[in-house]
Length: 148
Image 1 (cartoon, rainbow, N blue to C red):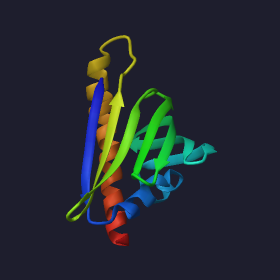
Image 2: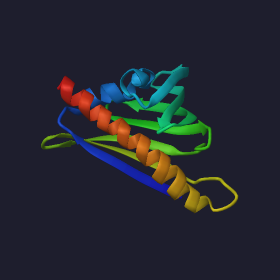
Image 3: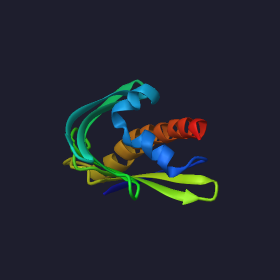
């Protein structure tokens, strides 16, 4: 099982950050490493999105079910297609004295017949997830602190 945690402290209220993060269809407008996010289905607070980002010059793509909970607030993704099928992702927004700590957790039981744990940890987690999640949170910080 691969588990990654990426966090950042943002000097802005959770509502501001949540509003930016939950509007995934707009991510390519303000996250330069995102190629596209396409809304495939919508069911209330849940939606299915096709997403693609750059890891340096390598395009990565997946389809995920996204559930937004503005009350908590949290955003959850369950990858349903792509190399990361089955991955569970959760965005959490924790109030701190200086604003909000935003944490993205990824959980993946990588289903590959050989060296699944190593590939999950080093290739998927260490190379792709850490890079894309880190860039996403850094840009969310810049946007939210500019809006605060």
